[in-house]
Amino acid sequence: MREKKFFGANWKMYKNRREAIEYFEKIEKKIKNIEDKKEVVFFIPFHLLLPVKDNFKNIKIGAQNFYYKDEGPFTGEISAKMLKDESIEYAIIGHSERRKIFNEDNKLLKEKIIAGLKHGIKIVFCIGEDSNEKEKGEEYKVIDSQISILDNIKEINENNFIIAYEPVWAIGTGKVAKSEDAEKIHSYIRGLINQKGLSKNIRIIYGGSVNSENIKEIMNMPNIDGVLVGSASLKVDSFEKIVFFEK
Image 1 (cartoon, rainbow, N blue to C red):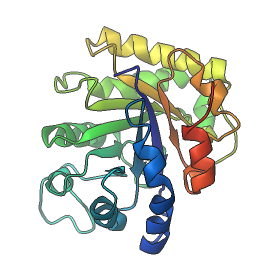
Image 2 (image 1 turned 180 degrees about the vertical axis):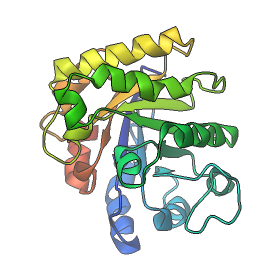
Image 3 (image 1 turned 45 degrees about the vertical axis):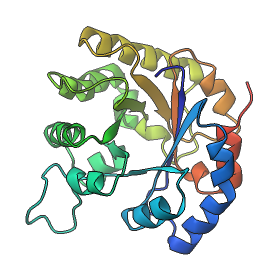
């Protein structure tokens, strides 16, 4: 799978139905025409999943989260089983905003990964250090801890799992890890997953203030297999410039 670069758009808590429909009316045909070379997935709010899936057959969509239980008294939650029942293909797990704001820890995230894979949901697993950890030189220690939850999850393979390295200090700040530094971390992550006996073809993508100006430099790094884009994915023009960049 590594030869097929991944471009994820994380819309977070933005856009109503009208705005989403207008967005995909503009971009659907262009996305369809490159799917044999690149994989483009839009991670959109829950209320948009079915309207977009039903109206745009050529658009791949994913959820931004789910809970690990199949059903039960969990007000406000959506399960992986529910997503699969609606033919939702992808989901993000472990985004730094979920870890920090909603206190999601490694134990919970492992449960989510196991549940998602059980129901055939493809996982984009986010990892990365915050500014304090970076200042202390603990980024590799943090990566070790976050990657450790993948131990003994035998269902992980290159077709159902993507790792997204997102340094927390770069998300939404305009700061971007130097491409050489990001490459070092990606190379380190690849070494870790090889040690764990996971597929060498698992894609490792970068996220953190990705935009049309830095995409070329980021994608020229040998161990960076794609990007997870935040604010720059909310406008068609800016996201198209990222997806259709020229080396």
